[in-house]
Every structure is written in structure tokens, then in C-alpha cells.
Image 1 (cartoon, rainbow, N blue to C red):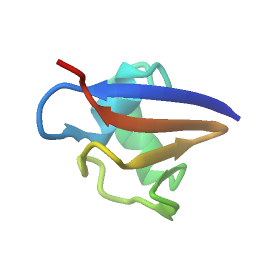
Image 2 (cartoon, helix red, strand yellow; image 1 turned 45 degrees about the vertical axis):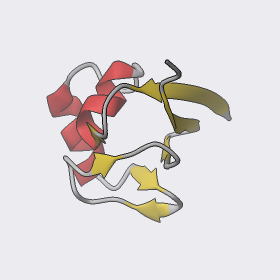
Image 3 (cartoon, rainbow, N blue to C red; image 1 turned 90 degrees about the vertical axis):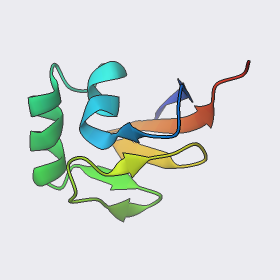
Length: 74
């Protein structure tokens, strides 16, 4: 399984945009499709909200990629 650590700037990022920024989706629209298709888990549970707010400490899984969202270091 591929592991990605994503440093988050700000309080949260929308799930579809996170998928786009890490390269799992070519666009925000494709990210929304992946969520709607049930391909994305947040903290081990299938997430159906396309624009769910993802915060530091959460883990997103899609296909065989695990994304650990961390607060950006200043």
C-alpha cells in the first residue's frame, strides 16, 4: 500500500479536492465520482459526502493508497 503524508494548510480540505491534490483524481469532479462510487474511506469508514471536511489527524484511503493528513509545520 502506498502511503502519502499530506501537510494541510488551514483548518480543513474538502475530500474531493484532497484526492485531486494527491494525484488520485485528475480533477475535483473525478474526486466526487470516486466518493460517489464508494471507493473512498475516511478513518476506516466508507465516506459518501463528496465535500466532507478532512482535518489533520484523519486518514483517507482510496484504492491501495493511504493518505495521512497532518497539520503543516510552521
